[in-house]
Image (tube, rainbow, N blue to C red; front, side, top):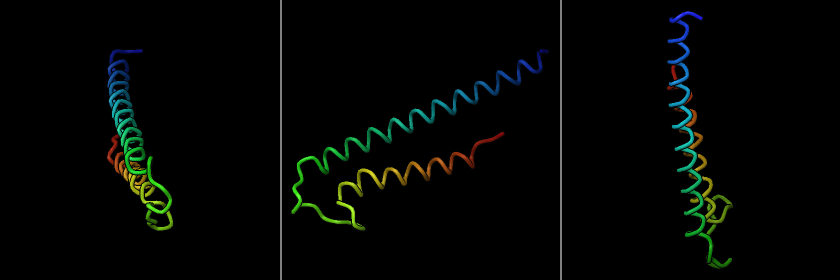
Amino acid sequence: MNEKEKLTRKKEYEKCKKEFKRGVIVTAIYILASTILSYYLGYKKTYPDMKLIFGFPDWIFYAVLIPWIAIVIYTIYFAFKMED
């Protein structure tokens, strides 16, 4: 392997490492936010206190569906933003 190939591979490796770190951080934030919101919005609610949003209890809508939709949108954005 010549020096040019080594440099190219090193650049690719550094880029992959950067993208991996970004993915881990975003996923950790998603899991943390979803867990904390689920706990505070739904832990001590009784059935009569729950409101339904599109057929889901409100705490599931705000703590699970909204963060999930947000991370899917971020993933799609990031996939189109990546360079070759």
